[in-house]
Length: 253
Image 1 (cartoon, rainbow, N blue to C red):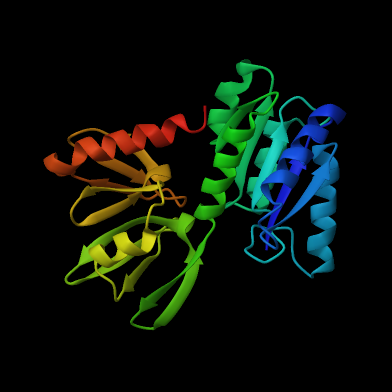
Image 2 (image 1 turned 180 degrees about the horizontal axis):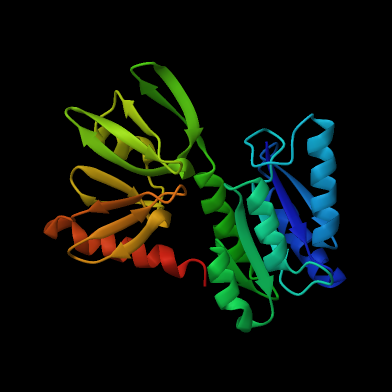
């Protein structure tokens, strides 16, 4: 089950988000646990206590108790939403951060945090629901057949997949390379309609959130460990790839 935390010190805003999330999850039983807080400090303190009770150190870990999605108000007393978001990512680097605010002046700070969505108040229902659809889909766990057996991990951990003879190799966000028993065509079917992925070349599938450069000459990717990957796009596939990339970039605004 996914864990979603919501932080907002405005009673009416918190009430609206609770109503929207109750509606969204009304027909999606057992998908997520949603926790509501009036401050970033309360949320972080409770999370730290929960981790301690589970005999976990306060370090970035992957476990069933982690925070998967955080919806944070920017202007809160004490820690604001941006500061709270950074603290969450220290503990859970894979967390999806969404920011809510009535003021667009925080957009640059939100971009620095690499938020998944920047939601203006009052929060638009359709936009929130679409953001949840996409983020929960990115959190999907997949089973990957390898020469050493089946490995399970999130789609969001994939930076890119590239051809390796008749099979393929996954490059993960930590820089690991995992040889799989699947070819690129099989991967395209497995990933399905996930709009986080696109193919700039017949031998590559790329996770768009890791793209740092997008030109007709070069596609640049950056792993979380700092490793830079360079891909030289196909002329036939670049136009479609560029369209998908910019559509993905517009999703956070």
